Amino acid sequence: MNDIIHLLPDAVANQIAAGEVVQRPSSIVKEMMENSIDAGAENIRVLIVDGGKTNVQVIDDGKGMSETDARLSFERHATSKIHEASDLFNLTTMGFRGEALASIAAVAQIELKTRRKEDELGTMLQLAGSRIEKQEPVMCPVGSNFSVQNLFFNVPARRKFLKSNQTELANVVADFQRIVLVHPDIAFSLYNNGVEMHHLPQTSVRQRIVDVFGKKINAELLPVDVETSLVRISGYVGKPESSKKKGAHQYFFVNGRYMRHPYFHSAVMKAYENMIPVGEHVSYFLYFSVEPSAVDVNVHPTKTEIKFDNEQPIWQVLSAAVKETIGRFCNVPMIDFDVEGRPDIPVMGTDATVPRQPKLSVSTYNPFKESGARSSSAPTGWESLYDESRLPDMGVESTKMSDETLMSSPFEQDMMGHKLEAIPEERVLQGSIWNDVIVEHGTSSLTVDASVPKFQYKGRYIVLPCSEGVMVVNQHRAHVRVLFDHNMQCINTGNRPSQKELFPNVIQFDKEDALTVEDMMDDICSLGFELSNLGGGAYSINGIPSGIEGVDIDSLLHDMVVAARENTNNIKKDAQEAMALTMAENAAIVYGQVLSIAEMEHLLQDLFATKTPARTPDGKLVYMIWDDKMLNDAF
Image (cartoon, rainbow, N blue to C red; front, side, top):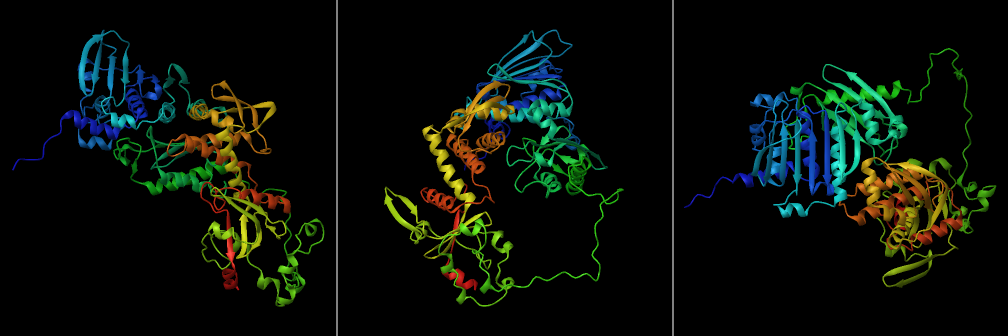
């Protein structure tokens, strides 16, 4: 029988390795920039064409390479960083495995020009698909000039999965920012299709952050600096009031290398516990310095997943350092009881008694019979629902439901804490609350019966009876559902009215968000915004959609852009829906807003005119029905 195991050709092996190292043009930018940093460069220029799919060029003024080194650098595992296995545990350079250039050369066309300071002539190499096509001496400045063209030219299946130019450019900018933030002592510049996007001179860490993300972030930063026997942590964290749901800039660096670390992220968020709203995040830029032997950066080919020997103690140090920073800069309200002139706090004597309020019986208590304007707005017919003669004579305290029970999960539990299932829409529509149901072309046109009593509970829910029990509608989510459908209709038709601004405001985006703004400008304008590009990521807001008065336009636009940029599939329709949802959530009725009977009826009518009234666009329940059986079982 013939043998079936054989060695792969070098070209095939290199393409397989390239699949781990080179995933998109941004991977090339990262590897090339790290090589330039290791070469001691003080100025690094990155030039890309068509988001990097056509060309990526990285030019540095480092020490360059000799003719032999230039040719050998494209061989697999050719490196000057390590000589034996023990060197892996004492790494101080960005690259060390010697696989980047070999992997890039396997799937692209490369031209390299390089010269050392002591050489009169440099070396020029041209490669395609791991094969050297040309080598000759050439006049060139000291340093290296790598030009990578036509990525995946020989692997069409891989090239097909590259995203749009705008998406690939955004990825390049993200990787570029991660590197420049940790090397403020090096000057960087980034060009896209000949247009300068970043020009970053040598500066301090804080100024580099401001140069990358704009002047606005400077007022949000609080310095962190702590040193222990295990680790030194420095950098900046955001003020609690600067928290946001999306778009926070969060970066960890260890020994000059960017890393992702969910465990340390939880330490930072723990420090902000009870100081920022649930679900929001703050920006942070934190730099760890540890002994090289205490970390393992050889976990993943991209070298962004890093293992620490002492993760738990470092977690404690990090969380304590962030807490101390927040407290030291007086960002946590406190009362100091040890200062002179403190306010006198009266102390209740031991013989003092607290007057006990008498209990009221249910037979004499009706919450819908109140004096003033509130009682006048109560709908007619509530008295028939509360037949006093059928109620037992017992204290209010014994029959009163706790607010926590009802508010903990109002749409997932009944009054006894049992999990509820959503009532199918077809069952809801059969209730007596509707006086007209017309089914036409698969959709329903509904009109709310104004004679049915309804009321608002705690400024959050609309409660009304139906044939099967009691319906409870979340007013905010209902309005989100209505506004989202309206926004999507405006995007599809492009006819939402815009309200002109008498004094236009200026909004500033960072480079990454500005790319998304340009890509989605037509959709943003279809929602009713009018933006004028002032250059440098600044836009003038000349018009806003009508009907969103009182909304923070600056935060709304930032949230919309971040939502569009973070859509998972990078499909334009998903980005449109993300913007429409963000705008709906910001403009919807807030919890606590009191609604009149007419407003409640109008909202319910609009809700059940939508195709999917039962849930919000992101899947949250809009209404729930407690049927007669659930109510009877509760008692």
